[in-house]
Image (cartoon, rainbow, N blue to C red; front, side, top):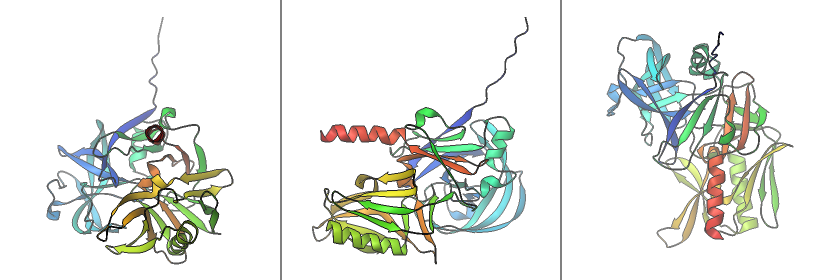
Length: 351
């Protein structure tokens, strides 16, 4: 009797580490060095700090091929360098990838990783991208990936899933939304609702764009909505919120009032509404120099002319599992299993 053994290709899971509660890093090797790279769904390149960046761990080309000079600008900073073709090892998988050796770096003060790896829609549409390399090597069965992010700091307990989604990573079913024709993973939204015990206000928009970006630690809101949100918090919830600027970033600081903060509902369409509870968007509460109990929110202002943009960063992605499908240009959204466990622990603690 002849028996045929057909290998079942499913997915590849890579452990990620939560760093500084701001972003997540993935280990990848080249030249017998392990680099921990920020996972960035808003970035269209892979780059690593070069020798001139004064980093303990840096990238230097060995037996690789230079292609051209690159200059890249991101919200956290700017890099200059030379792009190379380099062989990397990811979970024992050998992959030839393009990488920028960042010889000059501006800003990026808070980045403690060795660089970043881009998983934007434009990057994954390129012919020689990481996802396609894994697919062509029959490591994964579909050109998809997902992010399961745990809030636990400095521990490799989060997961980057290459391939089809795994059911036990999220609650109920994934709800899929078609993305816009853009370089980023973005969808069209309808409104943002502020929902309290006796109040409901809507920040409407005819051109709301929602971006899912793991390279951003917080939630970024367009200037008009940012200012309207402060007004609503003050007039309807007596939170005494103010705009404060730190390192040229506008943030919201409010008086401490645990009972007054409302929910924020992000409405994508009539069938999909994504809720953020106060504990989701409050970063921290503490006494200031004047012994006033103040709360810093995970909400920052973004300035893009004539564009109503809402960027959902790490704060959002820790609550919702997102699965990205480059073949159908869709994203699937469901509540993360990690967040649901945290909610149960939180409710148990207050009962």
